Amino acid sequence: MNITVHRPGDLTSADRAAWTAWQSKAHLDGVPELANPFLSPDFAVATGHQRRGVRIAVVREEGGPAAFLPFQRSVAGVGRAVGIGVSDCQGLVHRPGFRWDARELVRGCGLAVWEFDHLVGGQPSFAASASGTFASPVIDVDGGYAEYLGGLRERSPKFTRTTLAKERRLGRDHGAVRYVHDERDPAVLARLMAWKSAQYRRTGRGDRFARPWITGLVRRLFHTRSASFAGILSVLYVADVPVAAHFGLRSERILSCWFPAYDPAYAKYSPGLVLHLRMAEAAAADGIAYLDLGRGQKAYKDSLKTRELTVSEGWVALRHPVALGHRARRAPVRAIRNTVRSRPELFEPADRLLKNIGRMRSGKRADRDLKSMH
Image (cartoon, rainbow, N blue to C red; front, side, top):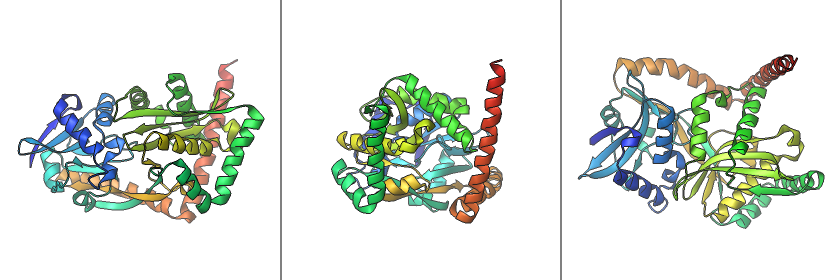
């Protein structure tokens, strides 16, 4: 393989056009998942502004591009998927029929190992190195919202009836309910991030928005817009007050759900669920084929989904001391995390512990805020 490695900003316009064209036609080529916005050049370029070591490998055949692999490289030669930790889809974007050797590609990128945690399906060369596979639920709306809602009523009649009733009650109790699919006010984005940070703390999870690079990435993507890619902020308002919001990424045919949150003061109305139904309706009207809810089993995803994709995690490693050291550090952590998540008898007590820690953190934070006012 003829492989060259570039900084994201150095990619030629012809290469970017080829990359985008393959994504645009992915559903016609039988690999619709390659159209995921996390696999777009726009996401790689935006991440490159926030993280060091972002590179794009270009594989060429007969003088033209055949495939693109974005990755992040450490000084030691450890490679990881671009935006790993927040990216919900990773892999090689390629022309139809392209085949590759995973280790040859990793070697050509100048890496000892390449790690992934949301590998897209249909990439057998990488998948052979996977250590686990996981469900990524989706909401199909290519047949229109009415078809989706009808199927939801059949699959989950009580859930559908209850959610729609809560939306009506929300309007009766607090004023007119209004939905904006593509809100452009950055102040609302800031409110969403504040809600999400509070949710992370409340549930004992690490606050992603406490990391400047993630906050900067989301803000940059919010302002990134083209015919084939955009950051989409969707908001549910009640009497012009935002009560739930979601920030995700859109390609021509896929809306990747990313950061949903809501105002806890309205929790009894399930505004997050109402928001997702409104998102599905607007996405269908906008020509989206499906909403990707992302890896992870959660009750709301199980209720809303129509089917599941499969994503994988693992690493392609060469026989190299750096690769051996990286796997030795990472493998035990992944194994423990996945075991806990997959076994209710372990996950439920761990989840309760995290929430208890979150409540203690929130209480201490409130005490600090109160003292600072005096």
